[in-house]
Amino acid sequence: MMRSIWIVAVLLSVAAAYYIYLPLPSTISEPWKLMFMDSILRGVMHVSFLAHDLGLSRPFDIAKYAASWDEIKGPQSSPAIRVTETSFGGVQAQVFESTAADQEPLLKRGVVYFHGGGWTLGSGKMQTYYLQCWSMAEELDAVVISIEYRLAPEARFPDQYNEAVQASKHILTAEVLSRYSIDPKRVAVSGDSAGANLAAAVVQQMAFDNSAPIKFKVQALLYPALQALDFNTPSYQQNGHIPILHRPLMARFWLEYLNGDPRLVPALLANNHSTPTPSPEIAAAKAKTDWTKLLPVAFQKSYKPVFPLHGDPKLLEKLPGLLDVRAAPLLAETKVLKAVPPAYIMTCEHDVLRDDGLMYATRLEEAGVDVTVDHFEDGFHGCLSFAFGPFRFSVGFRSFRSYTRWLKENL
Image (tube, rainbow, N blue to C red; front, side):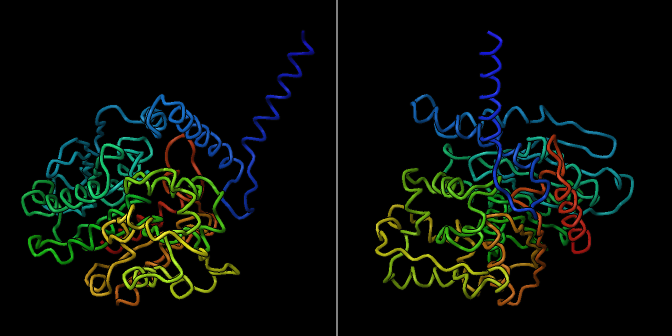
């Protein structure tokens, strides 16, 4: 009996080690901790997709349920930070207010923040985002407004975008800014991953919105997702299996956002939405994602562009959002980019979205916009969030300090 138990225990240990272990670059921050954390996240996603395949739930339901365990229950204030829940233009939000200057007639910085999660997962109430916004309010002596936009599948593009614009326009009014003692000349928009996508899209739209006289002073984008026309940029090729955002999962998130069939993941990964003889519209869009021209040579390395032999032109008919600048801010016209405020763009070497951020930085610089690229050689997707919560990484602390330092100096 004991022998059988021992054999089973050894087999389970080997299976667990096999599932946890991933060959990671030596340059990535704390690889063994990252492997363990990623095995938990992958496990949750696998169970979530299996339940969907068995007809028990929608694709991300179990992942959403697991994420809800990490949510802060109700606003929790302190003498230094006052936290309230409210809505702006009908969109729910949490407001983190520094109380340091309550007794002084000084106006504060303001930051409108959009959380990440592939437009499908996440919440500003999750411990990592809650603590991040709390710390930002404290570090910057600011009012940080974390927007709770609706998620897929209940909301699909352009719902999240519309809610982001709606909330931002409502916040950038004299009435709301005065209520929270925010300086109208010192308001930033920021976000990470899918949230950075929304932040970039919002700032582009509001740059030409004459109905909104108060504008964002700066934009701060953390490892943004900015295009879905090329899933074979050098960073996608290099980091396709690197935690915590694997290449197929990013394609799945885009399909959730754009209301596409999840069975199209292989077609997107093969760049089949491109064709050897594209239409002028598609050719113009592809030129704005041409990493051979937009990416610094050091990041191109020895990678080659991936072109399909035939392609599927009908794919773009099924997914028109792929060419919609509201979903893919990297596709914006130069005249639009010229009107947006100075930008901070954080990129991570071990992240499939690295090149989205770097290409956007190049396009902004070519349009005459002041851009700060903050690149972390040991960083991975989402690393800043891991300055907080149960899984803390050194690169998380460093990236958060760098991000808040830029905001402090430029806002």
